[in-house]
Image (cartoon, rainbow, N blue to C red; front, side):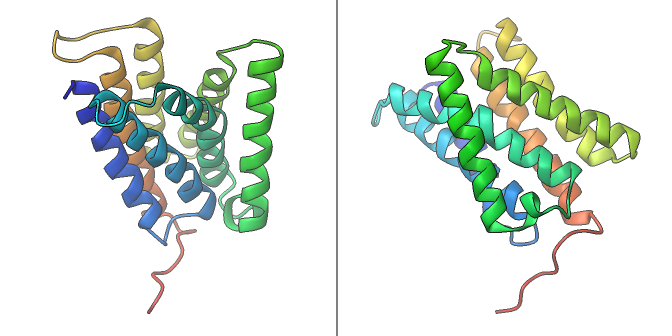
Length: 193
């Protein structure tokens, strides 16, 4: 089992915990679900249990163009229909994913999803800094740092690959954004059963 499988497993657990948290905005949970599926497929791929590189690559591209957009919408426009209503969040998910695939396949801009992810997280950083939202700011900075380190191929030791840093910083950023949303005045009350 490689380090990529372990760090993808951690990311999968953090993202799945976000999906299960009913107090988070729906769009944030949908974006987290995409990350959880992608990370789960990464665990299967990098542990050689069920290597599915094309399926993992497909969901990685889909997550890049859609998951971070959904998270940004739910963080910046917390009360919007796109953040809170299933119909509009689903439309946002489907349209952003479709646009990402069309641009990637038709125009062969393979980095399009990554650019969308970077821009969405950058917008979240600006919003959080303007409104002095420390947890959201730290979470978004962790996400952006993960993107930068992965894109530049940085390594900090022989034990961690650039993908490991992406997984670890994405998990940390996601956890901090969850913390922000749970403490936000817009947080949904805990549902009784």
